[in-house]
Image (cartoon, rainbow, N blue to C red; front, side, top):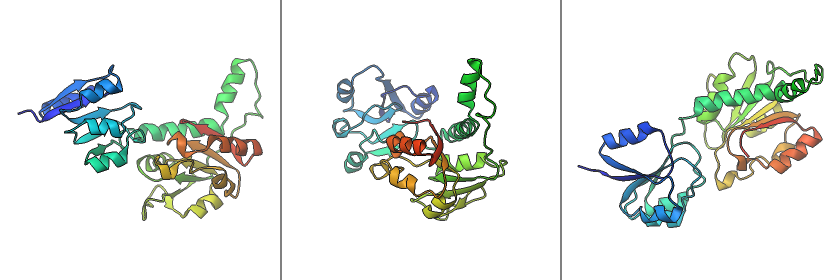
Length: 257
């Protein structure tokens, strides 16, 4: 007996559709449809799967008279009206652990590239320049790495830092008693006082809009290196540029804008 129709708004891993169909759901694709066209197809859907930045607002959710869930194949859900979903009794599902290892390794790669001036040195060598002293790197060894947000991504990054002979501290405003073998739980003030490196791993919600801004960056006791592989809107880029120019931020690696 069919359990209901699930509409794939954007491409997802083929295994997901295969498993859902094996569980008794009928899956349809709407990759090329406009938002309005998709809304017309929602009336008999029990679920929607989305991967892209496709906006799911109140109008979209209300069009799904039988909608029980919206599944995001990934982490960020800022493009989904979560308040409307709660009000309509529609569950919003994510897979926060799905990319944790990839993001953790990518973050470490960015940090190494940043502290060793790899992009600049690579570009200069290709142009025939060899500026050894100007591009001399700084070791992670002996530094204090501060992790802002200790969820799946933050913890995975802390794990990757093992073996670098550095101290790892973490602050998470949503959790308590989260310290583990990879990072020491600290209050935010300790992050400001002791971090040489700041790696951002907080999720986006309105309360975190520009969480890292001029006032935040001014509180660090010493110049820091900054890496953001979380969400662009948790960091005020204009404020970051001011601190880069002032030297209070030694360098920044941004994967999100």
